[in-house]
Amino acid sequence: MKKITIALSILMITACQQEKIGYVDNIKLMDAYQGKIDIAAKYEKKTAALTQRRDSISQAFQIEAQDFQTKAQSMSQQKAQEAYAQMQQKGQMIGQQLQQADAQLQSQGQAEMDSIVDRVKKEIKAYGKANGYSYILGGGEGGSVLYGKDSHDLTDEIVKILNANYEQ
Figure 1 (cartoon, rainbow, N blue to C red):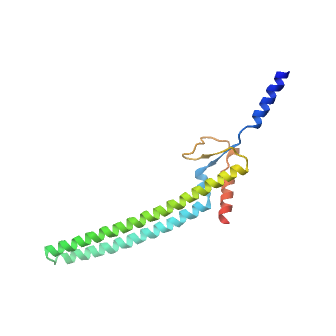
Figure 2 (tube, helix red, strand yellow):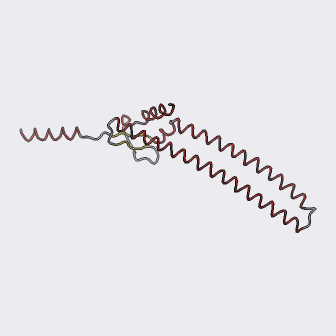
């Protein structure tokens, strides 16, 4: 009888010490987070503006190149070669400037997205601490949760908190 009582006591202590575990679907969370949505929209606009600028610069350069070809026919070979070298140099310079603008835009976008990811991680950590979770795992593509009970999915709760904090 004494052994049964000890065994039940150990079983109860072990059951009380069970870890509280939840998970979030990273993709669903990021797709529903308004902060990420706003940054994505902001950079879509900036990318569209850069594409429009690139197209107009390219068109202007093509027109200039066509005019040059017409003028080059009436130039001496040496002058035509010099002018062609200048046109080529100008084209390379324009290409470099556009590449730099593209790289800068991409870098800024990545920095803001990294900031969003950090904010999300901090919020998940704070949620876990406040609600007594030992672990909150990341699911979705590339995540570590291959299966989890729906009752352990914290995605919607954390999205609500993130969006509420973002609106403030």
